[in-house]
Amino acid sequence: MNRKKGAKSNQWQDHYTRQAQKEHYPARSVFKLAEIQKKHRIIARGDRVLDLGCAPGSWLLFAAQQTGPSGTLVGVDLTPVTEPMPANVRTVAGDIYELCPSSDAILGAGFQVVLSDMAPATTGDKGGDAARSFQLCQAALAVADALLLPGGHFVCKIFQGEDFKTFCDQVKTRFDRMDIFKPQSSRKASREIFIIGLGKH
Image (tube, rainbow, N blue to C red; front, side):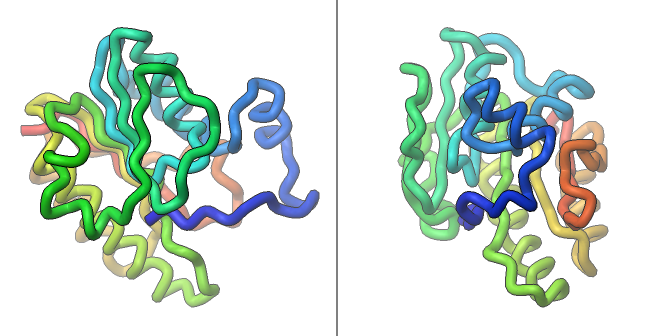
């Protein structure tokens, strides 16, 4: 599912990396979700939140702060999360493609928010990487179809490629509003972008 690489060499150290370490988050990706939250207020107090591709756990920790102790959070990733989590966070080590057919039995249902920071292991083949990213986005959207409550919100990372517009259109048909968002904290060379669905039909 989310095949994030391990620690980078010092060339990847930047302001966001240092800030994440200072604030005790395991990865700089937390600031991408923080930017999305600041703009769209997708997570509210007491929400049930599902985080797909959750390792190493930064988005879960941030989302748990937003929901407060009355919220419930479930994270899924191929890689087990080893970071200590609050009591209202549960993580599942598994493959999204295997979880899809019976996801409600494993993950629960009735989520107000579904997040996906899933990304394929990159190969350098931009077209192939984008195609694999689109497949993961399709899986995330299928989970949102099944588990996201009416009025709920959806955030999904995708690599820009020939399927980008197709995915945007799929989100548009399911939500009251669709936004395309490139966080300032995304690396300049990255082709990732976030599709946000607000208000599930």
